[in-house]
Length: 218
Image (cartoon, rainbow, N blue to C red; front, side, top):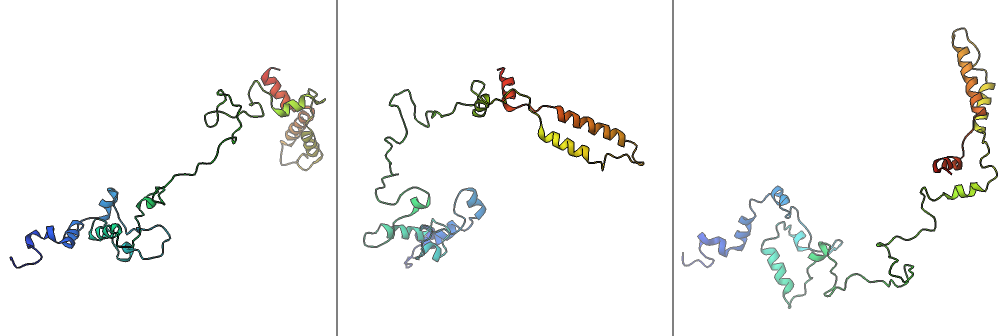
């Protein structure tokens, strides 16, 4: 056995790298790899949209703990070879486009947010910008009510014109108010409709200012 160039067959795991990669990943399943957050499908080592030669996709390399990735990494760090850099940071979402990234661009902020210059006036998002209108609460009146206060019709009875017109139309249509031999309750229905029309004709619809004034005890 001393004439073997490769090595001892009993220690093939130590000197045969392809043998070692084969038996290292022989019993790996996609379910176990998925539960451990490992690779379950062939991935590209280059950014999305790259149309050139991708070795991992071309040779259908699934497991990334083999001789293939070790040789790719050694060729990338070899100064005598013209190879692409590693795109792992780009694929994982880290902003890394240059050898010395400078980070996000800092836009000028002087004079962008109006400020009085005093330390008591906070800036957003640590402060609340004052609004031109007062907040709608029980201390402030809505703008619509402020305009209606000066109106001469405020406080006057407001007749519901829509109810009056609907009542007159219903009263003038005798199609369903006429008594029928087959319906003994037609007279009672006619009397109920007449009372509802009278109530709608002489009723009042309160204005929104009246409702707010009653709620605010004005």
